[in-house]
Length: 243
Image (cartoon, rainbow, N blue to C red; front, side):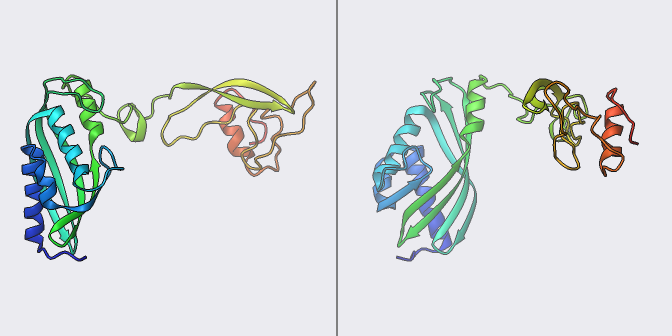
């Protein structure tokens, strides 16, 4: 069934749902503004259908927060669908996503899409930023810093040697050893090391268990990658015989 509402009327219905239902905790708002088979995607329990699905959300919000006030920051309408960006202001006074009450004043944000049938909401899709709220609550309300570690993506610390990680690499037929190599240096490939395969052919050299062939001894003057590989090796104390 197509919607009978204009864009302005759609926004009015959405504002009533949020104010009467989520701000004030009026469970009957779900019965007034949602269809009998309403679907709440990305909610606390997607298996629930009908107004009861939204009533479940109201109960969780009311038990976790007090002084609730939802503010619609943006609104768009496209036929029978509408989208909003909201921020919820409130005080964390009850358990929420496994976090006990902190008494902190919070701001919780989300982007929501709705589909209308007639003059009611038939479906809701939510992308709710629980992650930022979780970090805020667990930090005790303190600034929690950037998500990107130092040195990544050209940020602070970029260009500094990365941490060393262990890697198991082949040194000959059936033989392996543990190596330590730099990692996490943006924009720089890992230099070749003894035991690495040829970067041009991708193949391992012929070797025996008693006399394994190790890099860079297997490089040859005819290898198109020998100049590049041996130059990198020279900087690490390796041979540069094929430059």
